[in-house]
Image (cartoon, rainbow, N blue to C red):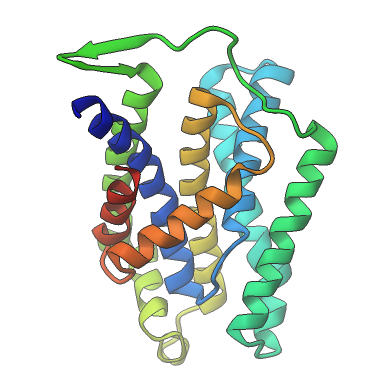
Length: 247
């Protein structure tokens, strides 16, 4: 039972990161962002390209993979969602467009990198024994990263000006615009940060079990369910939903 719960919490830690990113994007923009799963998948392949193909240092590869994924998320907003919002597209149209984005990106990834699973090591992961529980080092990193990134995310939302702007736009974008807030820029920031959270989760999973082009859909589905279970309008709720879902 202890091993079962520990494994579930490690999985839930990743769900929590992806769910926090999904919740930030959804509450700020109103877009049910299925393409969040495409950003998740792209992060794993970006890490693979930087680390295995280009053979860059590990820390630099992780940083570049997260930055590239965050930029991809911001591009989704600028190139697709913003023009649709300018035409007052309905939420259903935005969701279908997001699904289209997901399909396009996933098929591009499969075209360039193939459909097979990519891993970073042919050997087993080093493990750590804590009482009756055996965890790999990557699993421990998943939990620690989730806690650390979650704390930084809370600080961003509650203490920074950009975080307060995101919360204001999430509460009432029309009123925020009347008060002089740049809603368009705030949405781009939300997509950038939300996609970076998905990227961190994807990197941690890819290092543990590898990735294939189709892992993103299950990740975004888990994130959406975690948000529904936990709720969208409290910071900790999607994270708790993700942890519960993992177990």
